[in-house]
Image (cartoon, rainbow, N blue to C red):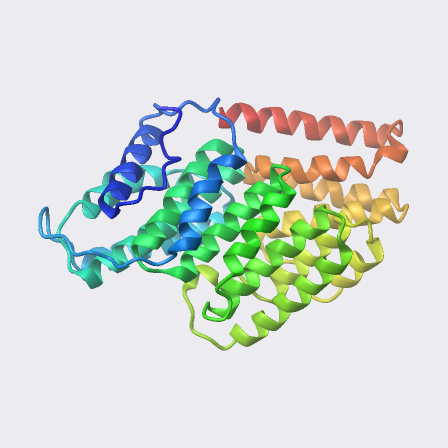
Length: 369
């Protein structure tokens, strides 16, 4: 059971079997949450995907017939889940039910009969949903579960012949690695996601460069950070008028602003953080998690600038939003922010605020267990 979901199967049929078995275990709560994230588990999926990111989808002739109506249903479910996750976070019931849907509805379709064209679209939409299941688990602090979802999503994207989606999933894996403290591995994966940048949708390539920028910032490399952000902006501009897949629609100048502000916060350059924040509006309620992140980043920058009152005002607003979203990942942002409050560690307001963060973290962790 401990290895379930970590296999990046060589054969397409085995990939379906592995994914379905993993979804079954998670859905039936047979997968134990005490398993931990291991960045080394990404090594084989990463290398196998780089060797062959888009294989030929094979038709199947046994099992119930799968048609375009099924694909439309899955597409609608994926779009709905993605919008709910952006607005309400990974702990809401609709997001949390993704694994149940993958096991009960999608897995039987993957074992059905379909043409090559229908099968290709079936694998692609399933990979998108599996990535989102991983993302919601990641947001809720279930890192080992998230990691396995990402690995299966990457394998299914490969089965669907979709290098764009695979690159996006790999960039998401890089982001998880970065947030778990594996900066060097995150740089490698982000660069791997960009490797086919000349043929990818510009927005997919731009997102990979943005994650690379954030990874360089955590490594303290301001020059590489700035270069990657500039390249990400150019790619976003190239892709602005395209009609790419809906799942990359979030990648725009506003997203770059939010991540660039965070990158320069990590570099300790509060002036650059303020400049990036001023370059565009705060994310709307439709992107509540991004709004929470930006608030926490600004709170850190104000602390770096010596403005405790404004820093705590923004820190409290970020805490309130992350708590409402049920985002344990958000609590990690607030722990980073908390380090910037060290000069005022004995101030009663700071003591109270940090206690509130610890209390919220314990509550969310208990809910995730």
